[in-house]
Length: 114
Image 1 (cartoon, rainbow, N blue to C red):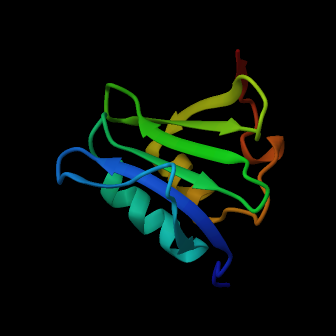
Image 2 (image 1 turned 135 degrees about the vertical axis):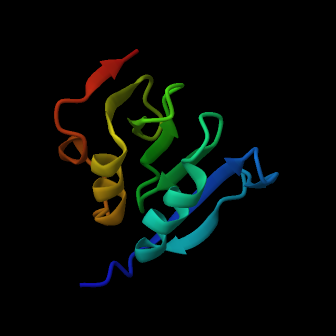
């Protein structure tokens, strides 16, 4: 089943010096999120931000070890976030199957970071 939902995205790829600003996110279909993440999340400084239809933000970035990924869920106009550190393959699975609207269930066992 193709993931044809549209998301607003921003990112920074420091290695290749390409980016989309968070203040001017671009639209990307859900089936393109995981391939973009695969390219971006190769270096610890790079990151990817994805907004759902309600402006809930999911951010993805590598840990300094470049083996694990942090996923952070930030609700619009709320402080803090839910953060989950997981192996790259598990993060990729989440990014490949994003729902149209993000909720706490997206990141089971995530910890609240205030």
